Amino acid sequence: MAKRKTQRPQVRKKPGPRINDKIKAPSLRVIIEGEGQFIFTRDEALARAESMGLDLVEISPDQDPPVCKIIDYGKYKYEQQKKKKEQSRHQHIIQTKEVKMRPKIGTNDYELKRKNGYKFLEQGDKLKVSLRFRGREISHPELGMKLLEQYAEDLQEVGTLDQSPKMEGRQLVMTMSPRQKKAAPKKADAGREDKKPLESDADSRNMANSSDSETSAGE
Image (cartoon, rainbow, N blue to C red):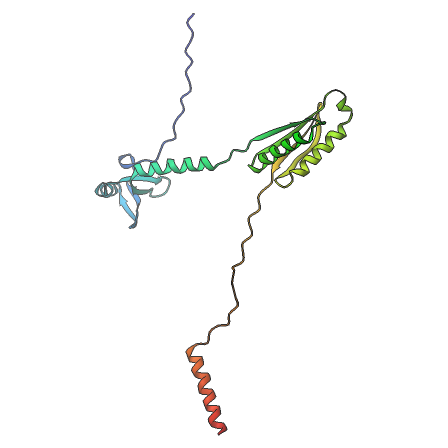
């Protein structure tokens, strides 16, 4: 029996803005860089764009009348793609990283786990810390609790506790979130001095005339 070919669902691409002849509205508000906004008929707008060697691009189709811009569409499209890539490059996707420990962890291993947790929280990821008990270690859960509390205290500079340590089967689990960074305080303007307002020339002349009048009266 012949196998049926499975058809993959087609992903529809998001349509771009209408340009040039694809714009159908009879009246348009047209933005021309360096000149301003104008109300044109569709034919007038197309003719103006053609005379400038540019494209008529519809940027706000829901307005009445629709808003268009006369630009180089190829350049516009390139700049939009470049901006989108730049934004995705700087966008950090929050992940949940995990650090696993044992109740009898050595000092060097603990320091390594602490550094890893610090790094994860500092770069903006959530942190899950699990401590698994083996054999008779389960009879002393308070030792694991104390260890996780110390771990959370060591990371309080970069993280806050979401879930306190709690038992899940044969392991203790706690979760932490990155601490929000505080905005740096604005520095006071250096060298600022309170200065008295300067006297105007008219005030200086009035004071001089007043002083001469007093001298004459004294004589």
